[in-house]
Length: 179
Image: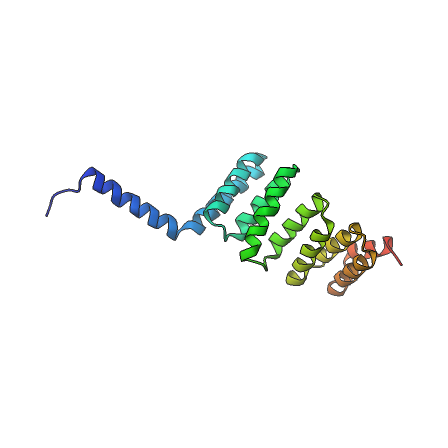
C-alpha cells in the first residue's frame, strides 16, 4: 500500500485537478486576463490587450466586464471586420444578459460607427431605461436625428433633462435643434 503512483497515474491526477480548478475558478481567471489586458491597454499595446480580452471572453462568456472591454477594444480598431465582430460578440452576450446597459451602450456605439442609426438608437434607449443615465438618452437622441427622426431626437433630449435638468449636452442639443 506504500507504493508510489506511476508517472502516468500522477500525471492523470494532476490533469484532473487542474481541470477541476479551471472550471471552478473560470470567472476569476477571466478577471485576471481582463486586468492583464487593462495593463497592456494602459501601455498602449492595444493588440496584446485585445488578445487578453478575447481569451477572457472565451473562458467566461458570462463576464460582462470581459465582454465590455473586448467590444470596446475591437471598436477602437475602426475596421469594418472589427466592428462586425464587436457587434456579434456584444449580441451573443446580450442574448444571455439582456439588461447589461454597459454592453448595450458599447454595441450602440458600434452601430453608430457602422451608420446603423436605428439600431444604435434602440440600444441607447434600452441602456438609458435600464440605467436612468441622461447621457444614454442624449446619444439616443443623436442617433434618432441621424436616422431622420427629429421629433424622436428632441423627445430623447427632453427625457435626459427630466433625469437631470442641468445636463448641458441635452440643453445644447435642444437649443441647436429647436422647433
